[in-house]
Image 1 (cartoon, rainbow, N blue to C red):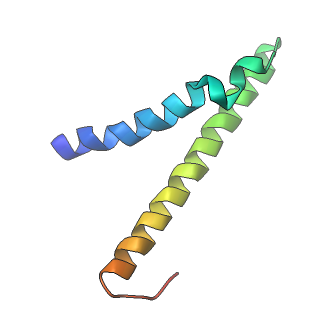
Image 2 (cartoon, rainbow, N blue to C red):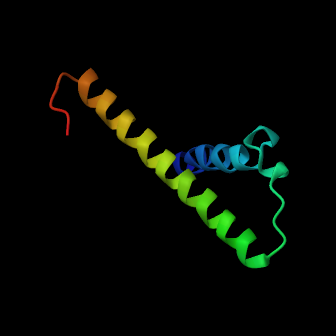
Image 3 (cartoon, rainbow, N blue to C red):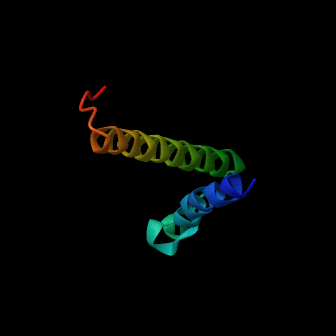
Length: 72
């Protein structure tokens, strides 16, 4: 249970990035609820792709560190 709780930190960090003022979402002015919903979906999708990329890099680095150099 503790390891699952610790893994939550990376998820929280990802959503914190989306809420960060440097992400420039505060300068986007959307009035339509449909467009706000679409922007939220796109931002969530971007976070998913970013997280999957990080995961793949970590797996590859771990595999290279253990001596198996086959990259898929």
